[in-house]
Image 1: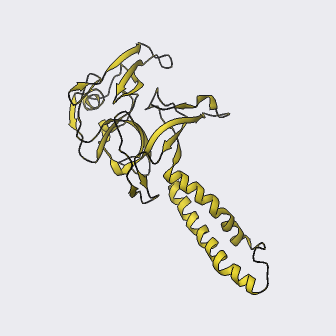
Image 2 (image 1 turned 180 degrees about the vertical axis):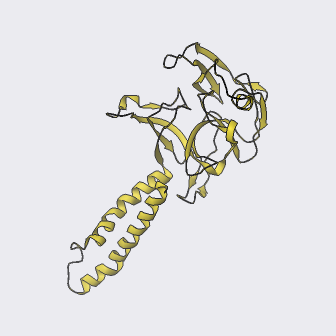
Image 3 (image 1 turned 90 degrees about the horizontal axis):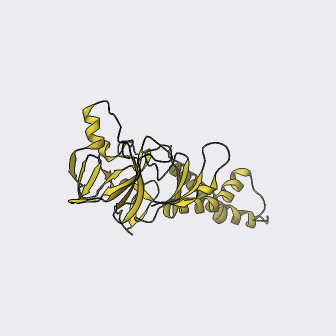
Length: 261
C-alpha cells in the first residue's frame, strides 16, 4: 500500500480520536469532577499524542518536500544508486495527498528539470528522469544526438572513458539552460533492431498538451519515454533539488550532500 495513503488514513483516525476526546470526552470528565487532562487508556492517549506529529509529517510530505531513494543507475552520473534525494512538492503546484488534485497552480516543468513522477504504466511506482520535451516541442533523436524544435542540444565530450565507468563516455550537456553530465555508451549492442531504434533513434515526435517527454542521463541504459511514452502532467510528484544522503549498506554517507541540476 502507498505510504502516503497509510499516513493519511492514520492521520484521519488519530484526528477523530483527538477531536472526540477534546470536544466530548474531556467535557464529560470535567462534568464528573475528574481531572480532564488526566491520563486515559492507550487507545485514547496514543492517537491523541500522534495527531499533531502526523499532521506536521503529512503536511511537509504533501506540500513542501518528500524524500525518495534512487534504486537504479538510469540517472547516472547525476544520481547514483543509493542516493537519497529531496523533492520539492510545490514547484509545480500544490496537490491534495492521495487524490493528487491540484489546488494551487504555481509553475510548470521546464526542460532540464529532474522530476519524480508516478510511472504511467504502473502508478504505484515512482520514476525519476530529466525533462527533455515540454508540450508542443518537436523532438528528434538520432545517433545519440538530441534536437529540439530544430535546434541541436549542445554537448561536449568530457572524457572518452568516464572516471567511474570506463564503458561509458562522459558528456556535458546544456538542456534548457541547465548544465549537467550524462553517460553515452558508444559500444552498446542491442538484442534487436526495435530496441536499438528506441535507444539510439532515429525517431521524431511532438509532445502533446499536458504531457512531457523524459529521459535518463544514462542515455543508453534507461527505461524512459522512449519505451513507455509521455509523462502525464498529473503524474508528476515534484522537482528534485538535492541529494541529502547516500546509503549503500553500512553507515550513511552525508558527504554526498549536493544540489541536483
